[in-house]
Each structure stands twice: as C-alpha cells, then as structure tokens.
Image (cartoon, rainbow, N blue to C red):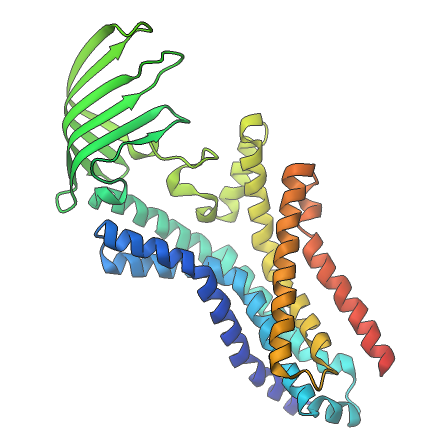
Length: 366
C-alpha cells in the first residue's frame, strides 16, 4: 500500500505544479502589464520591477494553489482510469476511499501551505511592496504622475499639475496645487517654483498661496519659503483607502481593522464589507484545496474513455464555476445584505456536498 501511495504522490507533483503555474501566469498578466507600463513610462529600475513580482507572487499563489492542485489530481487520476490502473487497484482489494486518501492528504498539505503563505509570508511581502512604493514615489516622481498632466482627487478636493519632472534628482519645477475648501466654489491655489520628493512627502519651495471668496475676489496672498505636503493627501482609491494600502496590499489584520473602523460609517460601509470579504476569501480559498482534490478523484475515477483532455476540460469548468459562485456570494453580501460569514462559506459548502454526493454514488457502484 505504501508503494501505491508513493506512486500517486510522485505522480501528483508535476501536474499540480503545471496547473499552479498556468493559473499563476494568467493572474499575473495584469501585474505584468502594469509593471511594464511603469518600467517604460516612468523609467523605473528593472530590479525594482523584479522585486515587485516576487512580492506579489505569494498572494497570487494562495489563489492558484487550489486550482492547480485540482487540475493535477484530475490529470493524474484521469490517466490512471484511462490505463485501467484504478481497476487493477480495485481488483486487488483496494477500496475507493483508500484510493482517494493520497489526493485528500495532498490537498490537506496544500491547504496548510496556502494558509502559511497567507498568514506568515504574504504580510511581509505586502509590507515590502508598500515600502518600495514609497521609495519609488520619492526617487521616481513620474511614477506618481506625468509631466503636463493635471490630476485631481475630487473626494478630497485636491488637484495638482507639474510642468517638468527630473527623476534623477527626484525634483519637479513649476508645481501647481489646488485645494478646495468647504462650499467655496473657488479653491485655494499654491504655486511653487520647484518641489523635492522625499519618502511620503512633497517638499515645495518658493511657494505663493492665493485664496478667494465665494464671489471670486482675492482674500489672502501668502508666501512660503518651504512647505511640506504628504503624498497620501492626493492619492486615495474610490473607497477612501490610501494608494499605498489598497485591499490587495492589506494583510488579514489590517483588513479586519479597516472593517471594524469603517462599518459604522454609511459612506464607507461598502468598502468595509469588501475588506471583510477579502479577509474571508484569503482563509477560505486555501481550504478549498482539500475539497477540490477530493472531488477531482471522484470525477476522474471510472471515466476510462475520457482521457486527459476531457479531464482538463472538466477541471476548468469546475474551477470557473467555483469562481463564479464566489463572485455571486460577494454580490449577495453587497446587494442583498447576506451575512459575510454565511455567504463566503457557500462555495466551499457546495464543493463539500458534491464530494459527499459523488462519494456515495461511486461507493454504491462498487
């Protein structure tokens, strides 16, 4: 029996790595496109882009390990059925559940790996991404903005324009800053001859400030030799999160804190729910490995004529079906006020029911 287990374990490794690599590559395409845009448009160091890739990978692997493992199980057990090796095992007295056990244990191991990545590795990777982002904003100002492009943040009433950027010196010239205050239709205007980009801060030099009343009349004119403006002043996402702290860049603790701090605010309720959804998904996702590996055996065993091509197709249908159910669960939470703790467990619960159903069905046949 140990020989058979070892044989199945060894057979599962390469197909699973193949599956994980495929799905990881698919999910990395958007990251690749974004990195290439930054690399060529903002003249970023190539090593910084490579580091960014390494930091992003752990978070993506948490999502792709269950998918790749399911594909690997389907290919391996589909191949065993096609070559009648499953029949040989059953003929020698090995039960169906004994045949399933190696895949189940394999999925359990991958679950622990996924949880380890999410709990211990990914938070450190996200921390490095945030540090790298701040350094890039300081050393490569046009990674923050482009020359002669007026950018605004309507949510906070800020806008700015830079005439010329010098990445080598991390400076800019002819800096225009607008700050809308209260119900006044006219913003406060700051004009700076130059600006220096430090980590998290824009240091304006030779600043002149102008404010206007509601009729458009100038009220106060002030001059500053130097003025510091935090970078986070300008850049927030649509949900009010800082640019350096998108949901994808928060660890589990930060996601929970964001939820607890904002769920009571009606304007931030949706953003808070999305943060809680993200925290559940990161934990529930790795747990799907066990159910998908279990289900993969049940869908493969007995389909001797299906071949690996059909196994590959079935695995894609199940995976994309699972993703569709996950997305539908998110919609139920946001639109129908279904509790997060219930809706986010629905996809895995459906996988469990499918495993039980096909297990009973296969068992009765034997």
